[in-house]
Length: 166
Image 1: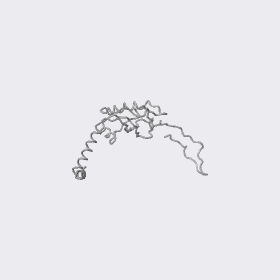
Image 2: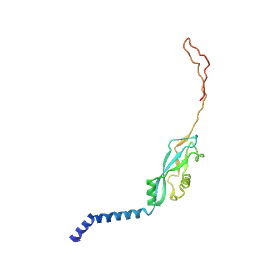
Image 3: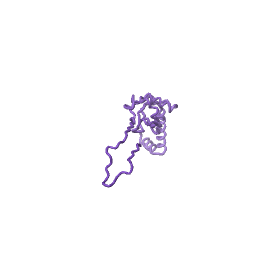
Image 4: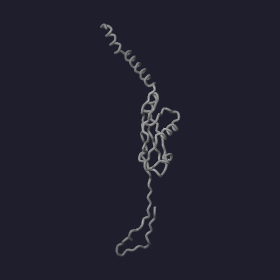
């Protein structure tokens, strides 16, 4: 290149027109890249609501990795504005409370039921998800007096002691 062409190139890239051209080219490239179809892993937020007294929730929020196939715009939107998948403990009544695990097929069906317009979910990464809950145990016992109360000399009870079970 001649000296004159090099100085013109340096002036063009340093000018406002060159900067606008580069910004416009970068914008076109980003739009083109986000318009393509991608398959990626996206975290899905699961919120569990306790509707029964048989279960105690240890945590109400879960983050589960899911495989999605969608455009780059859709995946970016899901990462920026995640919509939580809501589960209630009433729906999980057939769950073994000693080992609370739910299948990912159940979660996929719940996702498609709650979000029918979104058909971009391929499935979840794990085959089974351990839920943070445990069985509620109710223990009841009848209180009894082990020994009668001892009073100081000169004092006595005016009526018998009654114990109410609450």
